[in-house]
Amino acid sequence: MNGPLIDGKQSASVVCTDRGLQYGDGLFETISCRDGRARWLELHFERLRSGLGRLRLVFDMFEELRAEIQGLASGHERCLVKVIVTRGAATRRGYAPAGDEKPTRIVSRHPWPTANISADGFRVGISSVRLGSNPLLAGLKHLNRLEQVLAQMACQESGLSEVLMLSTMQHVIGGSMSNVFFANEHGLMTPELRDCGVEGVMRRLVLRAAADLGLGVQIRAISVEEVALAREAFFTNVRLGLQSAHWLDGRQLHSDAFAQRLQRQIDATPG
Image 1 (cartoon, rainbow, N blue to C red):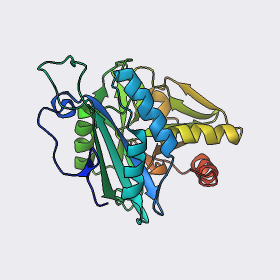
Image 2 (cartoon, rainbow, N blue to C red; image 1 turned 120 degrees about the horizontal axis):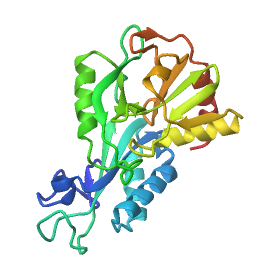
Image 3 (cartoon, rainbow, N blue to C red; image 1 turned 90 degrees about the vertical axis):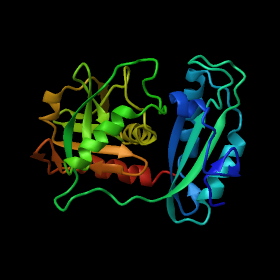
Image 4 (cartoon, one colour; image 1 turned 180 degrees about the horizontal axis):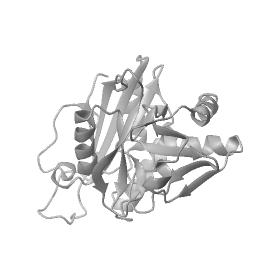
């Protein structure tokens, strides 16, 4: 398989009436693949199933999807496979689905990206783009990503590796493409994602690894003032793994002890 695959067939186009294109009506997963196999696939499927249920999007092609993902990963030492599931082509005009749509699944393989790290390390700033609060969509990896698009454009223009995004309530939520953990004298903490943000697969793995190591992690609202006092910060997604910040909002950080310990625990766990 070379892909991309649309409903199991090699193709590079969807119909213009697809609700994923029209309204962002769908979900996606980005899957890390190594040595010809998809990593943590069950966690990706678990999140996808949860999101489909919350969007009331009926999709039952998981075995076909699994085969397509593994087929695209096969023979590649390292790559990313992206999965998109939309509600499918609209059968009537308007936001409300008719209920007789047939879901569209899109699976594509991408080369492993080069890390965006400057000569003096992984630099993180604070984005001026705010994440709108919507508990109905919080945690989901849905197709509406304009806030992240704007944040990433500004991030690149500033020469940063990543940016922290805040909610309209001025609480830290995560990076533009990642979740975030901080460490201070009291231990580890990560933002709660009750109102916005994405519950990443790597975030789940970090929380699991921390529990296995007996490390407590506070999941709560985090203010910008607390970020200024953090001794360590690391960002997580399936591509970055656990990426320590070397510079955070202009301040140099020297510790990566928690990130290193947790990464070793995750690497030692089959996935």
